[in-house]
Length: 85
Image 1: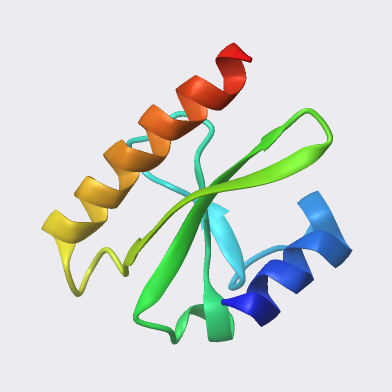
Image 2: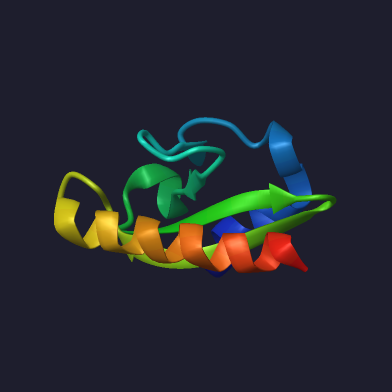
């Protein structure tokens, strides 16, 4: 996860598939995929101004759909609080 976060910091919005992708069913939420998607856990993030905010880490969606939806809800709640400030 640390290496994937470093890639996001280095490449920003230019970091593409398979390292990152939009989350289906969530507005302006992206998934950061360590090991080019081969990791069992992914980070959910959004760009807020100039900063990338990792709001939750959850399981990969196909292996644990319920856990992924739970992480997605947590991320959206946390990002809403960040964006209020």
